[in-house]
Length: 581
Image (cartoon, rainbow, N blue to C red; front, side, top):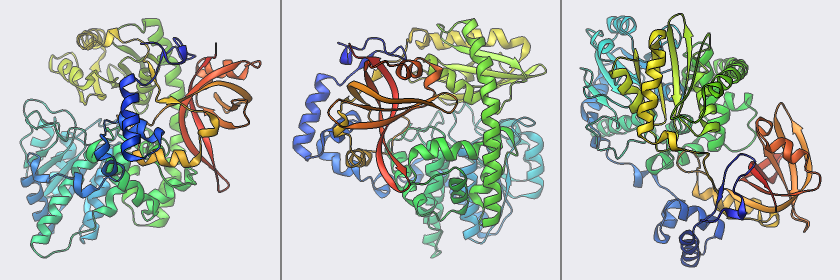
């Protein structure tokens, strides 16, 4: 297939690929059948939506997409035990992971229980001192003082720690890849159990928790008891879904779509405080969840007190919310500084080792375990290879990995752990964590690379840049973007459409911040668009466009609405560029 606009190698080293002939025909058919704008039809076709389903897709209803919670294994005993604990006013503890999904899941339960007049003890382990998931001392201590322990976003592989919770019942609400055997407890509700159907495998933990609460509310109604308004809790589910990079398909899409509407009402004081310190001045989008709010909620678990994010999301005290939001914002700035230092060192080490294998990895003493996952994600994005970054403290290394589409990193890491080369490890397809002894580092990474090579990770070159079509600056309007956004929200497995602006003239170019580029461009016919390219000077885009010398370029990216002093304008999130021949 011929390269789109003849771009075989762009500024980012990618080949541009445009719509296929079949896609073009389907778009024309969609346009004729629905009367929708061509750019929106392009997005719907790429999402696999047939014309007769366009209306329902553009207006997803949670009630139409939400399955019966009891279709999930162990949901019945989990909901029954949780409802009994509420009914009898038992002592409940919530053991949560320290990331956004864990914090949101915990907040869901805490807020729901508060509205029922009940309280719960929140326990989130310290990333450095305790590591991920339940541990025996913590579970023993919680069991002494509680009747029920609910593990959220963790616990599926925690056989020993759950067994240590003597005297208390344990429920696990998780989504991480399960092993062949499950912990001995009341219930393990997890769409990624090996004996599950897999139809809801894309849910994050907060989605699983929400499903539990749906069934508990149903049980309460059967007893003429009114449960809390679950729709009002969807802002927490949306935040977790986007921040955990869960695919925005099916039920998840409805969760996020409705959750953004709930968030726009600014009724959850913790999220309001966080949005304000993050400088959000427009209606929330999936971008805000993933890049403004999520990192700040995560910051406490990464380099501060692990429970800060969950406390912020659950609080009903405005003063506490503002205090926690300020604290998380400060920690997030500190996290970025630490991340940049580790990223520079890890990238240099990975490049020295080689970037053409099935696995790109780096390990060093003193790298903060709270940022290794972010650094792994950055290296994965730049190499289009699975990446693992490990920080050592003494002889013990704690690492995190990120994968690329089509490569199951979680299963590979879990297998290496099962073979004894890792002290522990697991996760899901796109992200996983591990703990390794220094003596086993090289053989463990070699074995992991071998397993990933069997999946084809060593045969992946720079990812093609897939484009949805051509636009001219005069056609890129606020109205067009609003129409396209009806097919959203956009995110993992549901990327926003990407357009090419051909033969563009650079009218203005300026470096902003440390390594970003701000430009304005036009087509010579009077119309012009502003664009921002983040990280442009990490590669060739920044220097090439800033030093354009009057040359013309093909520009590619995603359209967005920029709001400044109450006025809306079109902005291109510039992702790639190539000289126009």
